[in-house]
Length: 108
Image (cartoon, rainbow, N blue to C red):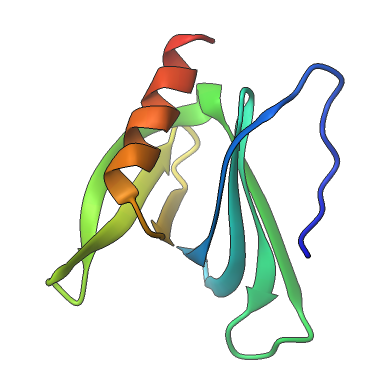
């Protein structure tokens, strides 16, 4: 089970099992969408003893777009931030995730 601390008025809207790639890390775990941020918690792919936790405040998202895995599978989301970071999440129901993230961003 993946656990992270919620802020005072923070609520979880979506959760999915998936993978993440960012910086020089790749992990398997869970992706969460809250009313404030996107949170990934999991384990590094190369060693399941090293945990990975990363968050993206919704107000830091510069661009979000649909992507494909292996140029065939429509199951990835790419996010770039105002701080120049890039994330790639592979999850089921990609389009519903993009819509939900954009909806949450509009409410900030």
